[in-house]
Each structure stands twice: as C-alpha cells, then as structure tokens.
Image (cartoon, rainbow, N blue to C red):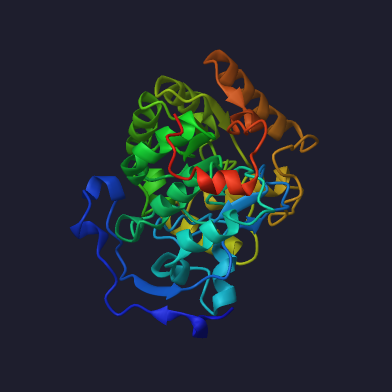
Length: 348
C-alpha cells in the first residue's frame, strides 16, 4: 500500500479535550496529521526471533511517543513517508480495525492463540483516547475468548481495566509496561511523547492491584547509556506488582540508525560515541541485525554481565524471566460455532 490510498482527516478528534492529560503524557510539540485507512486484515503473523508470539494486531501506523529507537520506523517508508519526524506526526488510523479483527476471529481456522497488542506501535498512544480502537480490539478478544499480551508505555491503558480484568479471569491477559530508563530527563530526551518512568510504574501498580498480570519490559537495553539502572528498575517493578521481566538489546534496522544517533547526539552529545562503540561490540558490528533475538549467548563478556545482572536482580525480587510471561492458553478451544454462540457470556 502507499500514502495515496489513505484518506486525510481534516479535523481529527482531539484526545486532550476528552481524557485527562496525565493519562496521555505530554502534548506533542509538532502538529499531528491523521489519515485513515480500511485494512483488509488485522492479524499479522511474526517470524522474527526477537518476538516471542506468532500473532499481533496494530491499529495505528506511526506513533506520537516519538521514541528515537523505535524499530518500527522503517514501516512508515512503505507509505511514502519518512522514518523520522513523519513517523512521529503523520499517524495512520485503521478506523474499522475491531470489525476486521472480529471477522478474522470468526473463521473456522482461528485457534485462539495469544494475540499481541501491539507488535509495532504503542496501542495506547494519545489518539487512542479518541478513537478507542485498542479498546475495540480487546473487546473482540474477550468476545472470542482469545488471550492477549499488551505492551505499552502509556497510562491510558488504565481506562480499559474493566476489559483487561475480565480477560485475565477468562482466556488470559498480561500487560507489559515498557520502562527502559530510570532517569526522567533521559527518558524525555529519547521518548519525548511518552509518560515519565514514574507514571509508568504507577500504571503498573494500578494494573496489578486490579488483578491484571503485569511485567516489566527493559527494552531496548542501550549499552553505554543506562545499564546500571537494571537493578533499580527491577526492584521498582517488583514493588509495583510485576510478575516478570524481559529485555532485548537495541537494534537499529534501516533508517532507525540515523534517526537514533541524530537524536541521541542532539540530546547527549558526549554519549553517542560510547553508545555506538558498545553496541557495535555487542552486536559484532551488526547494528541492524535481529537474528540474535532474546537468546544472546555468545555475544561476549559485556552481554554476559548484563544478562547476569538481570537474572540476579529478577531472582532477588522473585520475578520470572522471558517467555514465562505469556498468558495461559485455553486447554481445549471449542468449535467456532460454540465460540460465537457464547460471545456475551460472563467469562468469570
């Protein structure tokens, strides 16, 4: 597809007029342009070793959180946009995403596997407050008894506690909150549109208190920047009720390398060279390579030290590691006719 197939929205809904600002994070410094598209399908099948799930859904292209390191940036180039500022401000909304997902779930071939929301851009970026597409996706998963794994930086996920708690009690649900930095100034420099680390830990605690299994994503780990934060972040996550933690090493596919180092140099000019050197050491010069995935044995003593630090910190605070965080699957999925007949049954 290309940008010519998108419909520009002249006056997109303003999320700051409807939802408390502290749930959305800081307002964007640049004007946001919104386009809408009508997807033919929503379920994306993943085969990357970086990703521990098979299916994901993404209701948005581009992300207002504007994280400098986001591996999804090159996907914007397929629309004829840029991977830099365009990714942060030219957002594409899949307006009928929940309806399309329901149609896919209704197929006899659907086996109710875990669906990640999302595997690309943040499902709770500010526009979600107005469009409510992620909420619609969660409702579809609940109605079709499909387990979900959510990953987000946003406090807006708390709006959907009613659905997430029912999913957790029924087919299964887990929410990972992404917090790669402890320093709020560092986070603001590299994740300018996302809530502060403190607000994310508050969100984790609220989810956990409501009975939704939660975890910490320390992704991406950026060597030479904030490696020493691992024990503190794990401790704070445990205090907020997290049950597990995982981390992936930064990779910079395609245009992401240029975007990341440009923004890192602008924010922290004295650190960019050290980060590049450390990353090249760990990734054997392959900054864009994804083949290492989460199993990074053989990357040398520096990675081994980081891995050991994470394991020791997790063990000290009783947190699990890695794929143990997947929500449980139903033992024996009923035929599709039974699923549809019971769409509105109480799952508790």
